[in-house]
Length: 132
Image (tube, rainbow, N blue to C red; front, side, top):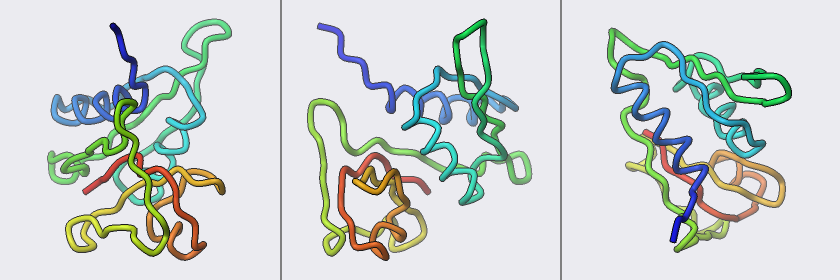
């Protein structure tokens, strides 16, 4: 039985592209992937994330990876909530990532948010991934 985890594939593409030293990567488009990419750009882990047209009427996401002294800006990305085991949290019980050195991305009713923003807005949701 094939299980497709599109968010996990997206995070793996970023991880593999960074470790391989690639400048850009392209992945299939989804609103969730674009929202995650925009959060990573805002936090300084990616250089650019934009929606492009890979072929005629086929959208994709082009990501420009960021490096600091030839070292990837992203140390690690971990998918927490998987299709087989969803993980949810409330705004009061949201864990800190590496004691505050990293952050988690939460899918909430108010959109895809960084953990600190979700705490500030007092909303919980599905813990998509952790970044550091």
